[in-house]
Image (cartoon, rainbow, N blue to C red; front, side, top):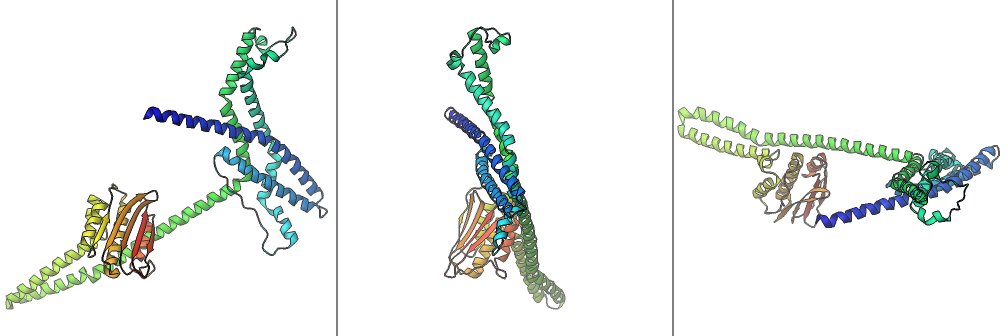
Amino acid sequence: MTTTITPALGHGRISRIFRQLGVDTQYVLLGFPLGIITVVVFLTGFALGVGLLVTVVGFPILVATLFQARGFATVERARIGPVLRTRLPHPYYRKAQPGAGFWRRTLVPLGDGQSWMDLLHGIIRFIPSTIAFCFVVTWWFGAIGGLTVTLWDWAIPRGPDNTDLPELLGLGSGTGIRLLFHTAIGIFFALTLMPVVRGAALLEAQFARALLSGVAELRERVAEAEAGRDAARAQTEAAVSAETTALRRLERDIHDGPQQRLVRLAMDLGRADLQFDSDPSAARATVAEALSQTRETLEELRSLSRGIAPPILVDRGLRAALTALAGRSTVPVDLELPEIGRLPESVETTAYFVVAEALTNVAKHSHATECKVTLQRSAYGMLVTVEDDGVGGASLAKGHGLRGLTDRVKAAGGELSLTSPVDGGTRLTAILPA
């Protein structure tokens, strides 16, 4: 298998290298005449506009020159993309407010910084364009001329007064020496052609990129940083909210359940203590009832602990924990749990919590006869899906049983969606990073 794949990969890489060489060459060769055109047109328009500012005519000339600079800048951004192998963002150009008058709309480009950057690029771009053009033309002619010297050497007239370069260097004056010398030069230029052409193209392209898209790229990076900051802030707030909600719920459940049972247990044991001397049989009945209360309290505490971090989830993983969770459900659950290996602890805990809360909601409110739980790994992450055939009408809005899931999933860096039409059926999907 290796012997059949490697040549294909090598061929593809060589093809990309030569394709890039062609892209870089045409970029530089076309950039030189474009640089001459833009410097003549823009300098002329700028000089005329500034010179005639004392009259009304100067302003329209400057505006027209700036619009021409925008057009050439748009063309240049399109040309830069293949060279830099990236898409350059289109910059923001200032626009007149709706309802602005003719002169205000006309003069808006004069106050636009990017338009002046486009004009500056058009005026001074001939400097890097000329440097790049000289290197590219020299290396291409050196490589082609040296490697094809045997095809054209005979056409050069020679006489007693003509001295070849090999003879001046003391290498000899024979035809073989001359051909070998020029061929060696051609090989040198051919071997260094790709890096030299690539460097010349990058010199010209990076110069244009800095002036034509530098501000736009900076704005994009700032916007991405702000978006990332906002996302991190929202995730932190969701984590705090989810933690607060979970603690309040745990506190309420403990207060309404085990705490009340323990208070009753203490009262029963106190009554039994008083009954041991006067009515032993009643005391034994009270102790038996207290033992029953103790068992129920322990079971309720175990149930509450499962909502935090069940031991089976920590010890055996998500598949085993969900299987145990489905076994305790009062609604039949169909599981589709492929072998996915261990996941980060936060992801497993969140997935378990989503399924546990969803199954609780199904048992309490959906009147479903069947439920399905699915785990699936994809390019987006881990997909956790809980579906039922109940009455529908579930909601993630505040005040509903599933509201806390949104903050829990967001805190883990995921997204939660709910489809629950009133005519029946609910589908809850959580996408978690994995």
